[in-house]
Amino acid sequence: MSKLSNVYISYHDFDNTSSKLEGAGWVSRFLSFLEMAYEQSIGEKLNVLRKVDYTNDYKLREIVDVVLVVVSPEYLQSKQYERDLHSFADNQDSENYQKKRIIKIVKYPYEGIEVPHILKGSSSYNFYTRDAENKPKNIKDFFSSDSDAYFWMNLLDLCFDIYEISHRPIPALDPTRPLPSVFLAETGHDLSVDRNIIKREFHRIGVNVLPLGELSDDLEKLETEVEKCLDHCNLSIHLIGSLPGRKVKGSKLGIALEKNRIVTDLIERKKLNISRVLWIPKSTERASEELLLQINNIKRDPKYLFRTEIFNEPIEQFKGICIQKYKQAHIDSFKDNSLEKKDIGDSVYLIFNKEDEEEAVNIKLQLESSGLKVEVPEFSGELMDIRKRHIDRLRSFDHAIVICGNTDKEWVKMKVLDTVKAPGLGRLKPVKSRILACHHPEEASKQFQTEVQYQSLNIIDLADQKAHKQLLSLLQTNSGVL
Image 1 (tube, rainbow, N blue to C red):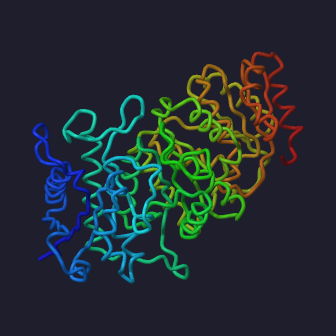
Image 2 (image 1 turned 180 degrees about the vertical axis):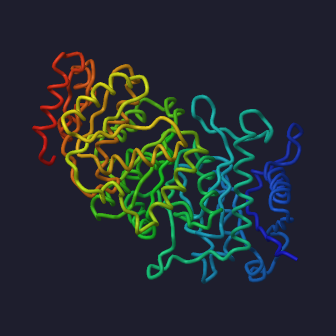
């Protein structure tokens, strides 16, 4: 017979007030759905314990696997935790409970209210929504159209967390025996379900996900805690959405962008061998003007692009990309096959979209007739295979040329930035030149001002009859190293 999961629940009476309209209180209804979801998804019953059921603190501490704390402003202000959780706080192994055994069920945000030590660092699930004006709102009806998907996905993730904590020992982080871990940064409320999807996928294949719980909201402490996590990781994953996440004391950024900044600085300052992937979905367009400016800065600033790839694919595709990146990071013997070939002269990676193929073919023929080896992108096959070959070419080119004819300008921007961040993708030789060939050079010069100034991006006018000669002249002139 399998082990029964014992869950201890702590909450304030205010959060379980019954009413004629809703019937049973919020906590009682939440527990009913949790028990039902746990049995259906895990195949076992969940044993829920309350303080009133046990007067012996030591007995309670010995049998409890997971502590669920329904957190709300009322709960924290009443200091209910002092009465309910003192048996766990007194435990000599209390740090283990705080970061691995205690799970916060956030019924309503509590920003500005001091959080007790025992709840700091524990993992957290948000069970509230936000309205059209981004104001927090209680979930009263678990089946309402604005909350059911979010509520049930979070509930299922919580079930799996309870099972894993109850049935599998949580290993300590031993610096002498580093675990295969990934750093999955905290995100805003809008992408928390997506973050859980990625977290669950890594757990499914036996990979540790850090941090184990919530990190500090104090900037100085947060930087230290992130650095400790990165000591055990080779991949850092960041989900940037339309909400900034919880506030960080001492920073103007929300938690999602602040962690992105900290990881970027640590990789550069400490020369960490860590790759980064950023997911910035299309829904980010709904972000505030200030947040959009900060996100656009991430997309354009070279310092944020070092060892970094940015994606906007659907979450299921991005999940697969993250797993692939993790596996690639563990192949120590990986070598770029293109670099093992004999040097037959400068190579050019001619980057273009399908709409500009005809113009690109003419340029390719001109370059090849001059003795250059020209690589071009592929447009058929599996997405991950196409992406891998694109990265292989970014690792090996001498000169990169991006063509902007009839193609969407955002696509062109991403490809130009791909050439900028190429040194962070494992290149073993320096870049000789980057060239943008377009029909509106003045407009492009404004759009890529940073790249022109700091990354030696050259711009030529495709409408000019002498464009091909100018292109060859640039390649010859830039035969040195950038």
